[in-house]
Image 1: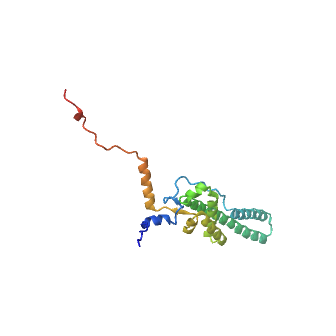
Image 2: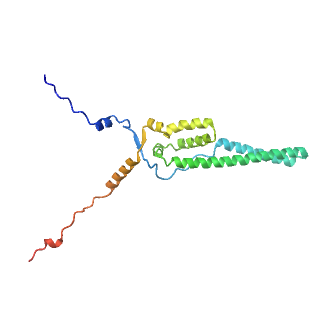
Image 3: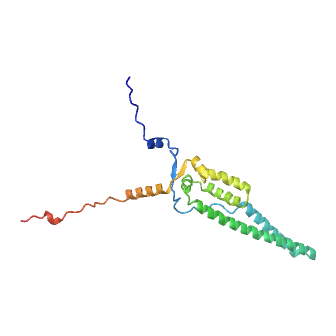
Length: 206
């Protein structure tokens, strides 16, 4: 009985490429997104802004009441209430200013990440801005905002598991360097380095 040899086993690297779990993934630049940062698109937090306007209206009303009051005890009560509401106005104004600064800083940082290249292509700036707002509120202790921020984080690919679900991967530094070298080689025209012969060698005596 003659036993025919089977096919030669494939090289491990060939099998690895065929079974590559990252096949079909989009590679994101390790150095992040380049270019100008889009302008911050949202107005100051509307809930905090409404609280501030209410406090300002209350201050204005108390000032009118204080001017009209004649009884000393009533004037003292109005002064205390006015002082309390003026403090509320100052506190809310500071909180809104600080929140806006935090939002803009986080916004700028996010648009320098590798994931920002995908957001730019898909025109997702409003969704990124909403994530920024929830994230800043979450850092102030808002539990509802924290839950919303986590959901948007998954949709925007801001954690390793979300990247995998979105079929995205951030290229390694060595891969980025190799690709950069390849691009530079393609952009550089070849030069003729062959030494030119001595023109005197072609002269003939007449």
